[in-house]
Length: 130
Image 1 (tube, rainbow, N blue to C red):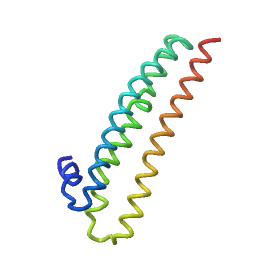
Image 2: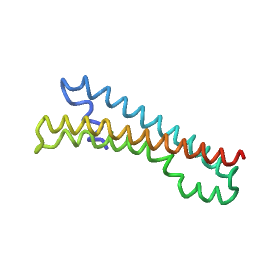
Image 3: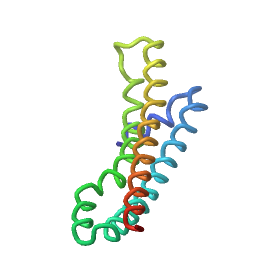
Image 4: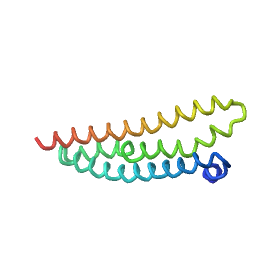
């Protein structure tokens, strides 16, 4: 972990790109962790309202998805982005293409997981309201 954190601050002229990337990734990781906690509480409340005790049991089986997955995607990106650039066998063009692909796909997957969980919780709450 310390090696990947140190990488963001020791890139020389590339620091103009890596330091903002560090802060953005940390901010998004903390943001999704906070929103994941809120979604988890809402998931348990909606499941209890809709299905009672069995809803709480079902929510207990899927709670890691809204709580851990989006923040985990940003953590994985934060931790592994330096590894993409430390590879000696890749050309600069390969490193840039891979970094752009990963920096687009990982946040997109985190967003889709977050929105999918939000829609599922809304659906469960709609069932409980009937």
